[in-house]
Image (cartoon, rainbow, N blue to C red; front, side):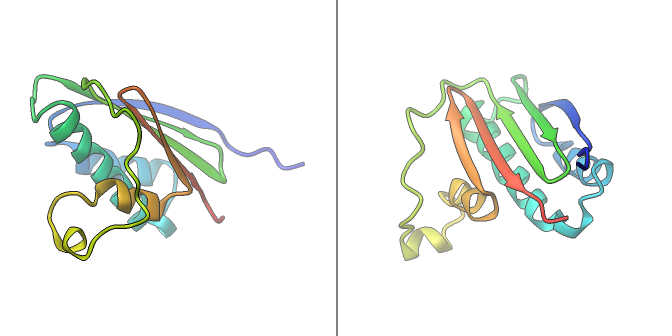
Length: 132
């Protein structure tokens, strides 16, 4: 039986000034260059949503980004200071207007590039299986 590498890490962001550097660090640390586009898109959308919607664009409120890496799977947790969604809105039917809009696509895109997403209060949990 092959033992998969396990890694866990947490970052705390205030605003979005360092999110690109943190995403790049995660990709480099975990050697995920082969799926860097997916990881970058997932985290950019999740962190932007947390900042704008959860923290109401307040740079003094923290956003927690945690990951758990198991070699063939990664779980991201993005936690903001908001009250959270009651539930994730339906993401299967996005209107043509929404596809071209600058807003309203974040969770849809995350769903498209991950295997699952769920909410626990103000924490978004994203699972992605990695093909090694």
